[in-house]
Image (cartoon, rainbow over all chains, first blue to last red; front, side, top):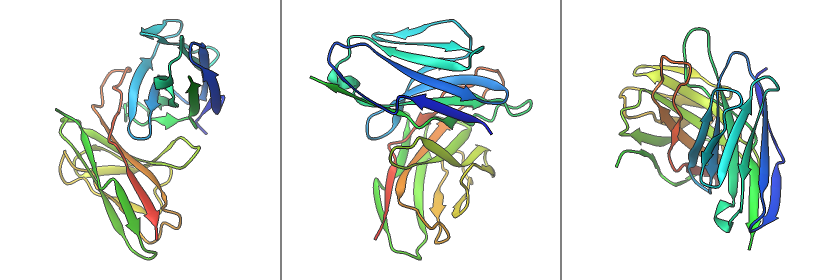
Length: 115
Length: 116
């Protein structure tokens, strides 16, 4: 059965700290791994990773994928209170020869950044 | 601006009632999805549709039904057969790609359904 597991499930840090969120997966015919940030409402897209070892960066956020060990990490440096959110990891499998766009989500990591 | 609109934001249902959640997108996306999110859990796929007049069951389709008569619209009906419907429901859309990379899904703001 395909599954995505995130850790830790929750995390409390202080402003300025660096955090690392983990996502491991077991998916048949892996296509891509995506990270989303959810603040109460709609998840907003952060990164899509398809190749191993290539870091993607956006400001203080970065992410990398290891397709051999089947995991990804999301790093946030110099955290701010605005980073408080649920971070979701999702993996998209290939279904035969078609790309259905289906995603399998992890449980999410709830990050709280204290002033 | 293009986006996905879900309505209503909050919905209350009496036991035994069917209710329909609306999802409309003007992104010209072919694919649309419905997810359910419970507290402390990730998103679970209810139904998805890759093209008009076609849809497939996701992982937790029991007690739900959908239709896809128009590209822009993908309403979800929560039937009385769904015994635990209280949850946060998210609709998403994407442009399925013929390439391996695919496309990220864009989400609406969700509908929070509660049982009276």
